[in-house]
Image (tube, rainbow, N blue to C red; front, side, top):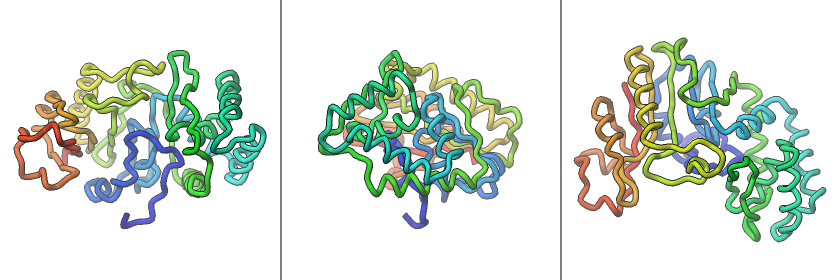
Amino acid sequence: MCKPYVKSPLNYTGGKYKMLDFLFDLFPQNIDTFVDMFAGGFNVGINVDANKIICNDHINYLIELYEYLKNTETNRIVSDIKRRIKEFNLSLDNDEGYKKLRERYNKKKNIVDFFVLICYSFNHQIRFNNSHEFNTPFGKDRSCYNENIEKNLIEFSNLLKIKKVEFSNIDFNNLNYNNLDENDFVYCDPPYLITNGSYNDGKRGFKDWTEKEEQELLNILDNLNKKRVKFALSNVFYHKGLENKLLISWSKKYKVNYIDKSYSNCSYHFKDRKAKTVEVLITNY
């Protein structure tokens, strides 16, 4: 990393922290309003240089956590977390303590309990069942609240407090794009149609991502382009032998930036697609 970016305290699937240099080199300068349409771990939005940042995600627990981190004194956050760890005697091998905390969270939905659960869950994953009960298993001998997480948490919380961030918890179709103009910028890192994630497979109490949602997003981006609003879309063309034909066809209207620059001079039809994940950033500028 060339710059001292702040890292999200969440180990979110598909997080873009390691790609920030690549993304920011391609993002436009002098952004007025930055819209993070699918915020996820919020690594991009927290680090972007913009006058105003809109942090949106359809998973309400994420937005509630970010609001808590922004509006609560940072030392209080850390002390609340450590108090919770002590209360349930959480450790690398205390499965029972983890299960008791998970049971209480699913009854009371306390946001501190939610964050601590993530710290001790398997691979720090966030999973719910269809009743919106947190159901990630214990990360025995693997996951815990540690110095790195605390460092990221403190830096993330402190930066949230000084940046102008507005939080939104609505479906991307229902965001208000009417007030955006050519000085604004929309970044999209949606669920990838040809990859699987436990957060968007339609089996966890949250919306599935199908060709219908993919087409709806592409239509929104086309409309933004007509208004001369700049956008960037992170996605994949190929993954484990699968091909996103809808995205590839649509992208020909715009600029395709390959994450692995060795693909930039290739055709769309790779000879060995099954061995490749071809990740791209599609922009309209």
